[in-house]
Length: 507
Ligand SMILES: Nc1ncnc2c1ncn2[C@@H]1O[C@H](COP(=O)(O)OP(=O)(O)OP(=O)(O)O)[C@@H](O)[C@H]1O
Ligand SMILES: [Mg+2]
Image (cartoon, rainbow, N blue to C red; front, side, top):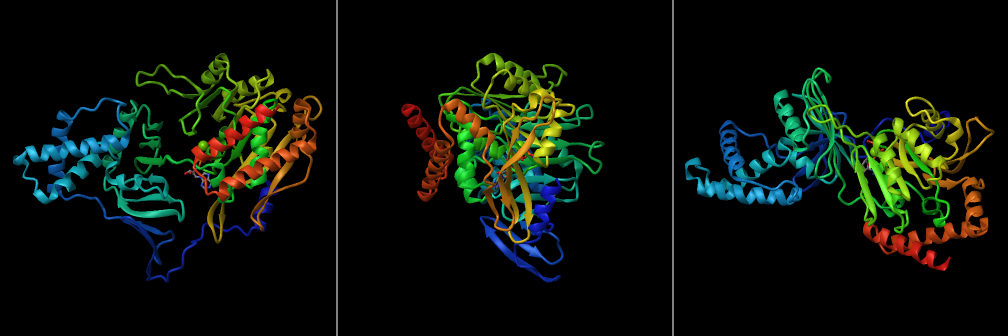
């Protein structure tokens, strides 16, 4: 921790500061606009302001929309799971236009048909007031913090931003939370005042209601990136270097002989799952992958992939399937790879037991602020991995979200450390292989010979020189992809998989 503090001080990291031009107290300066969105820096506000035309409705508009919703509820039927979210929106839109046309008694003005159809879609299959926010790809997160308070969003470019949207009553937020819960067959009420779920469109949602959240119902939506970040994106965002990415690629496939067991560690929203997705993409496609997640977020073009997701207790209070149940079950599925989304409790213990009985290439994420803290967390309750087992973990990839004065929020892999076993029943030592230099803003090799590579050398019969050349060759493959502007995960995985297949043929 002290080490990280030192790094952060060196980088003169200050609390979030605007990357955009400052505005004097009375000024409101437009700093960005796209689609219907305008973003201002307002001298009166501490964070930028995000404005869209507010979809708040007047009384008679609300009544008409409610009448339309009632008819639509009775006449529109959509088979569950048959349509994508977008197709469902389109289908509802068309049907509501038809309903309007067939119901002259509703007196919908001819030129307002679309306005009403859109509003009904938003209320029935969208996210109501915040629907437009869910359509903005620049937003990572949408945060409703209670009634009569602005809805906040986390913007990819401007970090925390206040919107001009506001719910005026807690019951409106509660209605939205109820609707979201129903859509995933769950409920949120006094008995279960917390909801944590993934929606069919991939959005991750958390909701809380009073008295758990003191100032009203809260809803936090983490938007699902349909087009996930590939290793090329991560290099281009400067999260990782080509060489470090190539090293992780080699570790993830282990030349088919000795894949590393790897954990990505970091704080909340530091990009752990995204980096785990990159690592999982490096697994050769002749291996059988089982992923186990709390809410399924990994997103890859893999063929032989079994995705498992935890099942919370049902409305009747039974049927829970935990992370640990799933990890235990996966061991009976003859997996080549077990990937555990986030290690928090008993499943961590089971995962280490699996590594100890010879499962290789096990990967996952863990919430911790340093490599050292990762080891402490793993060996303490509730995970409680015995010291005798801890060294079966090979690498810890430290991920950080840092506030840079000029660049705003940046996400960096700040360290790739490996575990070197010590004497029996002592904590292994940590050896840093790659380290982020905050001044140059690069992830650099420390030059320390890797213990894991020595093991890999033993398993593959290749000497260290060969392995370093292999890393270089893979870094070149990645560079070439970037030079050809190929960044889409399908293209990137296509090329990296073909490379692995050609290596298999040679061996
Ligand atoms: N390296 C990166 N550069 C830019 N954006 C990133 C990067 N990594 C992740 N993101 C974005 O940051 C958000 C959070 O990422 P992610 O879910 O991977 O974080 P996490 O650490 O797993 O979060 P949590 O603690 O909630 O599990 C996502 O919207 C993702 O697209
Ligand atoms: Mg995560």
